[in-house]
Amino acid sequence: MIKLKQISRHIIIYFLLFTSILASSPLFTIIQEECKSYKLPITFNMMNLVERPDGSTELNLNIISERNKFDTNMLVGFYASGKGILETDLNIKKVNIYIKVKYKNVRQIIVSAQKKDILKYVNNEISYSDFINKINYKYTK
Image 1 (cartoon, helix red, strand yellow):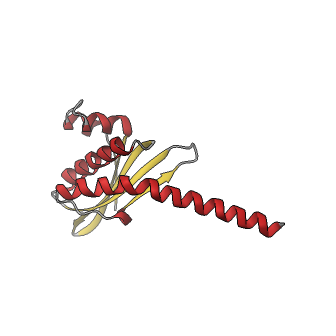
Image 2 (cartoon, rainbow, N blue to C red; image 1 turned 30 degrees about the vertical axis):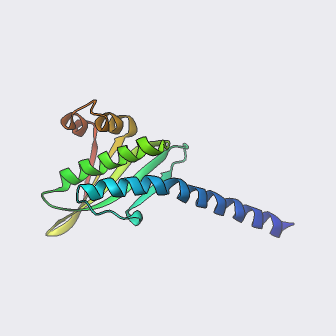
Image 3 (cartoon, rainbow, N blue to C red; image 1 turned 30 degrees about the horizontal axis):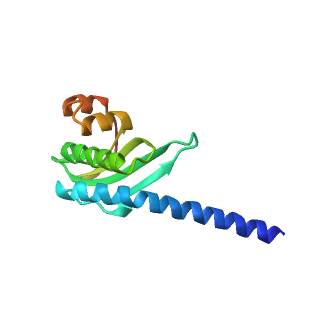
């Protein structure tokens, strides 16, 4: 009886993981294609969806950037994420972008924005300068 419960629990966990991967695949493909069109290389292993305890989902992107291109790459990452969210209609509340900036040492900038602000940016309802003011920044070494 105990083994049956353990097996059924494992089946449920694998099913949830598999459906999560299937749901994220179109999103990741769209983001990858958008980034590619702006010459920003990104692979599937540089993206993931994170389910928060409150039930919300966040999209995380990892981007590697040159010192003088991190702001452009950040905007491309948010734009590509917004396009993906629009086309897949996933319930993502927030996008976090981890930008590793290559300069003497590698530094990391963590930027995040809410879905509503990203979609306004993608739909040209706000300018990029207004969008930049809505982004949360955190610098790490």
